[in-house]
Length: 483
Ligand SMILES: Cc1cc2nc3c(=O)[nH]c(=O)nc-3n(C[C@H](O)[C@H](O)[C@H](O)COP(=O)(O)OP(=O)(O)OC[C@H]3O[C@@H](n4cnc5c(N)ncnc54)[C@H](O)[C@@H]3O)c2cc1C
Image (cartoon, rainbow, N blue to C red; front, side, top):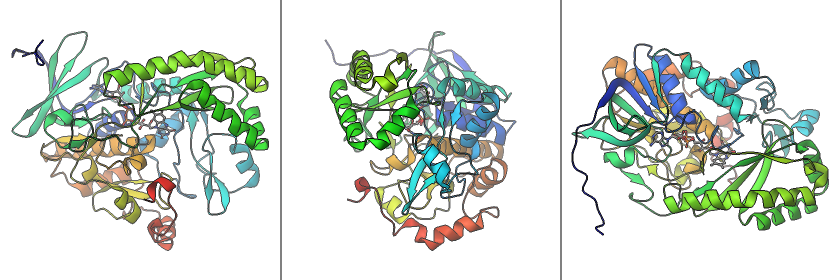
């Protein structure tokens, strides 16, 4: 059998055209579409998503905790990311579990004790524990809210269950995308395309340099791990957390054996309330763009679920006696695969030196650095192809730096910023490369509730604190970042 099949040229129906096409509706794509539509209500925005809902890893992969929306007492990550929880608090009370914005960074003992039982809601700052604004949430409620956020904007058109398969590129300028759906294969044209597929599905075929399988540097990434999250209901999480604190050795032995029972590394955390847990897992060496690895992950995890639940019930009946398998995430969990080699390439050195970028579009506290880091627009901008942007977990970063910029907040932030950049470019008739970045920064910081450095509304007290610690450059780093 021949290695290749020659597909003959044919005419494709044109679905339509738009100003801004966002491919992928996860945290990044959803934010990109909304930010673009708000920044330029005259622009026609299309968001194309391969499944029938928004959220990607978040609502479909059941990644149920958004970490560190504050730096010290400052609510540094806001914008569309904080809007999720603001809206959920109002529209679906009880679906979010987190210290409030006002409590974040404080060390009030009674609150620290209360929140130490909830995943990531306290953290070490110097020698004390403080509260962290790290919402744990219900994914189905968020799925509904994300739908509503898009439907409120008449200039966004949704293409659900459509898979972007091939970029249309002419003379190094992207012109649109070919996509597949139940309605057949079609083409859609756009002035600017934002690749938010998480795996560079569009930029990797458009002629833009990238890393990962088939790219410049193909080796495995630090975060090259797949997952299939599942949830158990009727678990006494509060009781378990108290027991864990009082019995650290027994708890460590329990989690070690959990790994043996599963056959891979797994841990559970409360999932939006204190009766439900999500079983996170890290299946090492699996690539989410490899069909064998995709199959292996899903079968391996599903085959292990009953075994794991039985083990929990037998070992910790006081917390798991009435527990039941609630559901299994509808989609594979994907941490990292291809990464863009964009106009600015973030490296471990970048994070250590924590530079100030003229084109900063996000200011981020991830816990990886001792001060907020700046994410530049250039890390979302494809080289060699015009009008092609990337946002989310596949932006331009090396194996180390990607760990600091692929969490949910950073995906929302780069999504929101690229959406605004695309909106400005379309309005001004500029391109993704020539867009007026000052205008983009102004809209983000003054109209879209995104704190940025060096704006006239930047929090001066916060800047003073950052300067006092030399932008965190002298601080300690997690072990994996030191060598
Ligand atoms: C198990 C697990 C645990 C994690 N834990 C945490 C955590 O605790 N906190 C945290 O902040 N982060 C965590 N992360 C990382 C974080 O969840 C992701 O990096 C982030 O959600 C990625 O968002 P995204 O929008 O860039 O990509 P995705 O969420 O992958 O979204 C991409 C979207 O594009 C769609 N799509 C893909 N290809 C195409 C295509 N060709 N055409 C059309 N649509 C397409 C997908 O269906 C999806 O909706 C975890 C990740 C995993 C997998």
